[in-house]
Image (cartoon, rainbow, N blue to C red):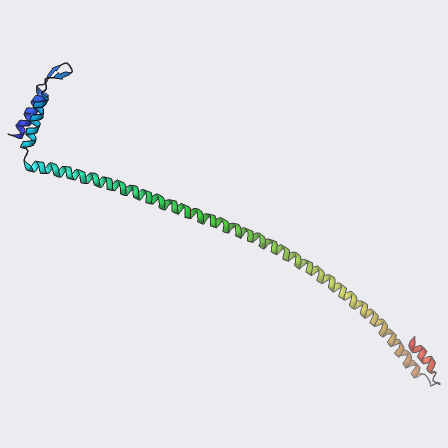
Length: 184
């Protein structure tokens, strides 16, 4: 039988001559339609059947490839999400570490400022103490020099008296009087 003729008969039974009453169709012989379809299938050449099997196999391969692609895509998305999450966590860790280091540097800067202020205060106090000590030393030296001047003055006076006495004409020596003068 010719496949085209069988298909035409099927078309006539199902489409061209159905019995209708308004929207209701009746008179279709389901068995007859099933038998015609079975005849069509039986009369198909082996190449058509092989082509249909090839189409089914290619559809299966395409479906499998789609599933594999979907799974690969989902896996890649998960891996990408994991990598992004790790990168965010690493970024947050580095940011926190930078904040801590910044706080340490600010803290060290504050300590440095305090140290400089304290060293300046100590230096100023040392300068004041040095000036005070110098004044005290100068006053002490002046006092010592004044005392020395007094002593030297007395010695000079004594020397002058001694020289004057030696320049006078000689008189009998009164040792007791000389001792008395020397003590004075």
